[in-house]
Length: 563
Figure 1 (tube, helix red, strand yellow):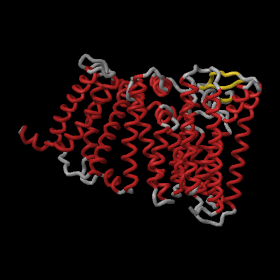
Figure 2 (spheres, rainbow, N blue to C red):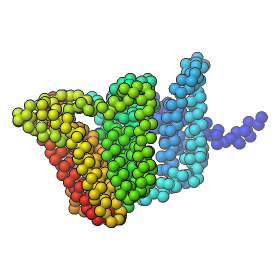
Figure 3 (cartoon, rainbow, N blue to C red):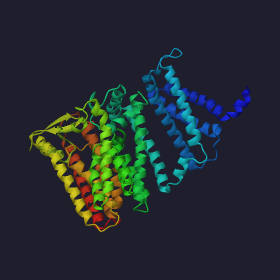
Figure 4 (cartoon, rainbow, N blue to C red):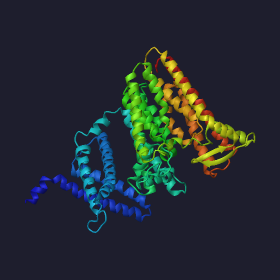
């Protein structure tokens, strides 16, 4: 055998193997350096992985596949697709190894338990990395680069701005968490949920969980890659970032249909996201928010089936996106598009059944526990009606007590307990009133683009769900991010600016509430007057903002959708 000829015929593969070994060396050396200077082991592992992937990108681009002379757009697309490819193959490896062990291939090899399965996993990962690099990342007609270069310049700038700002803000956020003793919701509750599932325990039947099935899947994903709580938070942040990029894309695309400056709307999306960063990174509410705005986007593009699919996924992630379903149905039924309406109902039913089916099989008695979790819950302290009762209670006009239950501070007493039982019927009546209002207005419409009204009425439905509820957690403001940005455009110049500052003020007061009412008091303790007034004033501003949504929606319903 002519070894020289063999090497020449497979020159690219040989170079890939050589630089693959060097990449492994870079990973080991950088990991050792980070540990040596005192960096946490989990964080050292993440940083060494980033260094190794950056090294691999450079050497694969220049020396292995010899793909030089890329434009800035192509270079960015190559880098994103390269990192994305490595994340994908890492996830495949994380899933493949336990699967191989489960089917009996985890036996001892070379004296190491599970080494045979580990070897197969590594071979698959290396092969996938090579194929992705050769046929996706460094090909002359990079599909991702072509797609990215075809995007509007404003959207491309938005992606870059958001990536830079989000990365810097996230680093500051996690460094602060790392150096403080503050518990992270993601690093404790979500990490514990993921650990339970990875141990083979079923949500709802084997352990209590208040979140719907799709949420549990999203919570599980980072746990497939790491066993470290801190690393779990970092991977969760990457998951959040990915969703937020979709949200930015969909928000921009909706805006560009109605304004010649959609970049301003996407900039507001970025600003609102960053000022709510603690709730964005340390809660999972960003996922249903993005899915809802995605459903709205596809609905406005008349891709109804896709809109229904994404909306249904949003509902099985967190229930509140369901409030947009009647808005979609009314729009279609008024226009006599019975086929799309019927298909929408069928799609939602199928996705709902499929999402709950494994849990029904496991234990029918607990499968719907995430729905009944809040049924007996009292008034949460941040809800509008609770803030009024708390003020009365502070001046001894009513008898109330503070209790910590269901993961939040709530108020108890004869009056709050009685009102808590009425909140669900009140919310249902308010929602029905909105849908009747929308139906009557839409039936009188003489044509035109009714999509602005669909967007605004969907936003209004979300607001009613928040304000007429016995729970209004701080993270619920995350649901408003894309809609608040779009409201600035739809409300008109003057009202739009007022709406923008109203939402900003609500966010500031929510952050102030976090400091005053949670940083310096224990769970279940009585709220002081300053804390009560902060919540009350925030809720008043939310009602004022709702007025501007109603005003904008009425305007567009009366003008047949002209913007």
